[in-house]
Image 1 (cartoon, rainbow, N blue to C red):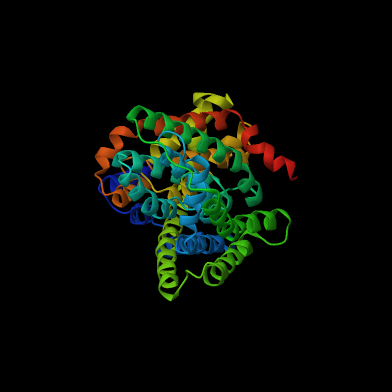
Image 2 (image 1 turned 60 degrees about the vertical axis):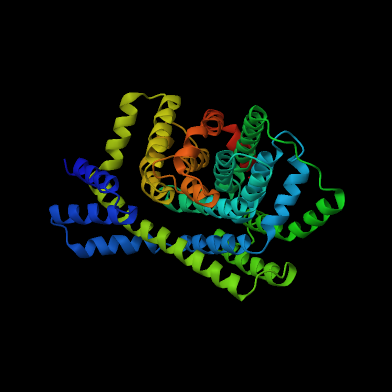
Length: 426
């Protein structure tokens, strides 16, 4: 009874528009009082949730992404993508997907991708008579590629939240092929929609411009390479790699690109502090909620509910997908990773699902939630950048949902797509 009350109270608070972190905290505090557990235990569990050394990687990765968004690399990535993909019908849509894929490899943040790519490409699309809803839909769905393409701070959060040991390096490698598949599906969808709307073809900017942009972008791309190779080679831990990424980004922004002045550095610091504070507050509140959930035997109840429906891994995976997609439409991604990983991962492992494969499935499922109303933060950010009402974008975004949904099913039921690349480095 107490478990049901805890969950119902949480969703009631969320339905009333209470911020996620406060909803978790209020629901947990009320249950602590009802169960007559000393309040000091609540604070202990909240601080314990945040007092994990591996979580140090998250603010550093967020900071590196903020710095990258302000070093001018986005413009060079757009030039590279336009030369590679921009000559087909509605080429700027495919350029947006390609540029977001490359930008995801240096920022790892969907929100940063929308801000950087949207502010650059949406005005270009408006100038060439693309519809505003198309520009927003392509940009926001392509932005979630950064969640799959390494480095991704959400994968670090999943590894920390997992009740069993999960290698961050394996997760980074596991996201590459699914990320490329998702990019290909979105490119095809962008082309199909553009062809139906008879958008213009792009033009090749010329080899000198392309090569110049490629040369200037190489130092930025090396960020992801340094992180992934360094972790796989055992040269440094994920936490150390995130700190190295920050130092490297500052150096290339200030000395190579010479675009990272004091004002932009301050903006990056402020953005990273805001994002990190939000994530850490959610993690702390989720730690308190998770402790109560475990105390009330919630994981066993969830496992029993799923396994009672079926003992077939394929069916259980489908049920887990449904749970993640529904919850992702209402709750922030970081919150769900922290709360649902300890609950769902043991169920997945029990039916023989690899935790690395499950992590990739969770990343894409919750990434889709970022662009799904009513709470999709990335969708609303894209609408704000594109200056259109969310309702207008939602009416025409369904082909992109369909593309991502098909990719999600493919990577869910073909584990080799996620596990083959990590297996080559073991």
